[in-house]
Amino acid sequence: MRTALGSLNGPLRFLLLSSFLIPLGSFMVLPFMSVFLHERLGMGLGAVGVVLAVASLVQFSGGIVGGALADRFGLRRTMVWALVIRTAGFVGLLLALRWPPLAVGALVLTCCGAALYLPANKAYLVHGVDEDRRPAFLSAGNAALNAGMAVGPLIAGPFVLSSPGALFVAVTALFVIVLAGHARLPELGRREGNEANEANGANNANEANGEQPTTGAARTGTGLLTGVAVLPFAANALAFYLYFHFQHYLAVYAVERASSEFYSLVLLVCFVLVIVLQPPASGLIRRLPYGTALAAGFAGLALGLAVLAIGTRWALLVGGALITLGDIVLFLKNDLEALRRSPRSDAVVFGQQRLAAGLGAGASGVLGGQLYGWGEQTGNTGLFWLLAAAQCLLLPPLLLLLRRKAATHLHDDDTNDINDTNANEPHTNESHTNESHTNGIGQKKHPNRTERTPARDDAHGRVPGR
Image (cartoon, rainbow, N blue to C red; front, side):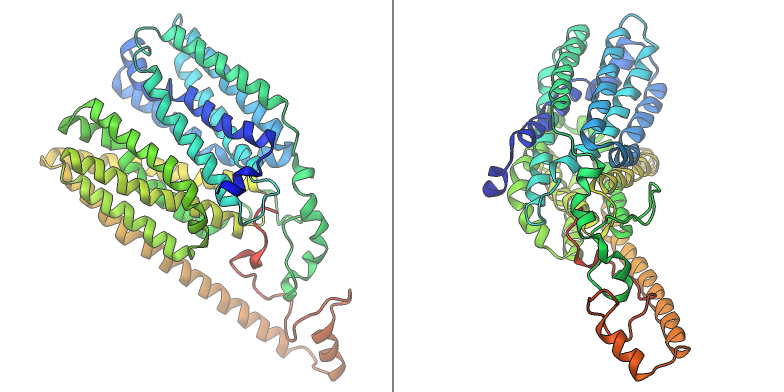
């Protein structure tokens, strides 16, 4: 970790600093928006819930648009646009003190900026980085993000209701400074980001024949979901769905049994665990087989959610810590595996993973709310956490089973097609000799391989994102 991060240049060091400053400014405001909208601007709680649900969906799922824009227009340019939009959103919140209806649009605007920014930020951070160092860079970015999220509410708590105007001015000024720094970053646009791919792209036509695969220069398409790594996408959606049972509903559960201050302490412990543990563990997480990482991560979530059902203060702390350990493994490993399997650019891959996160978080809000409401009606909200823990144990094996069956079915169909093709082809000694040794441009070809050979699911071991 120390060696990898010691190689960071000036722009990447600034980007890591920004990964702390941006959530610092955002979390000086966003965690208190329900209180601000309800008590300061007089919105009903029902309306507040709808506004926050829409904002969360935009912030997560909009990442797929951010990834596509970064792929098309360049990473630095996309980050600058995103920060302009987000800064305008905080200006709107300041103006909403005089005209409250502006608050809703301003909040959604800040979430749009976040959706555009994060895929480009992550792609810039790992641009040109070899596979061994990528986990260290990504986990360092995650640690900076969580540090900002932890410190922001501590700074802003005393001022969000008493002096919101001064708070919004300070946050806006912080974003203006960060925006100016991003404008000075060197551009790593679509062309620069794919130069290495283009240099190695001549073998793309031979990939189906068993040759060294393309590293991504030639795209299979430009759709938002083209080239999506299906299993990491689905696993990420499932991980966020289960994790957001904790994120959405712990506040209500913890405040009833302890206090709002103790709830803040639980969140602080969770943030600190990510900051302290994920960077040094990133290499181990990279080396874990994907199935092992999924099993360990979902087991951590299951155990933590089950512990929460006890309902004591120690159970809240221990349960939150176990859930955090699970998500440390799951979220990083899913991103790394998506980068490894997908032929798309890094920014597009991160955007697709953000879409999965948004779908999972949205489903958790809807289905989890129904389950928690049922628990309240029965007078035992601990059942909610036990049901969530049961889902952690039952849903991941089902996901892997369905994926395995789909892969087996595809392999059988393609094998039948290959056999049918070979049965109709003449097999002369000359043609067999040529097919076994050359593909016409001096490269080796394996015997009896045809253009219908199915692509391996691990993207043929290519360097991820290159």
